[in-house]
Image (cartoon, rainbow, N blue to C red; front, side, top):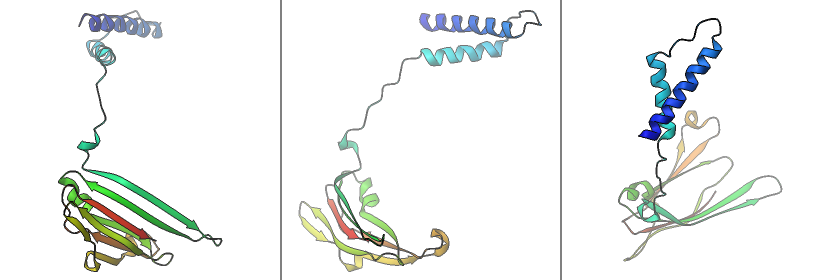
Length: 171
């Protein structure tokens, strides 16, 4: 408290002398109450101790990406194929919904979507993602610009805390 008062006092005197030296035509007058309050607030802000922060440990994360790989194959004509493979562990209940449904958008004139593998790995066993859990539909042109877009939605079945959601696809 004493250090903060001293810093505020020094800042106040410096500001008063600076304001007085700028206005040479007028006499030096004491600083107004509102201006001194602003100076004191700045002094307190800079004299306050730094806030302590820490990174959240992985156990606090709703989900954890345990594996991810993206592979690009670029052909001589400039076209390309992208293959994505990932595994996500569901750590908390909130991740069941956020990670349990995956949405992928692609340009249907320039690419073709192929689901290479998708499954839910639980302590009780492996639950495959079947055809009824995958939907590939056209998206309205006004929302994505001029290119015709498709959106694939994959709903992982029987997701529970502790599950690992595995996905592999090619576009």
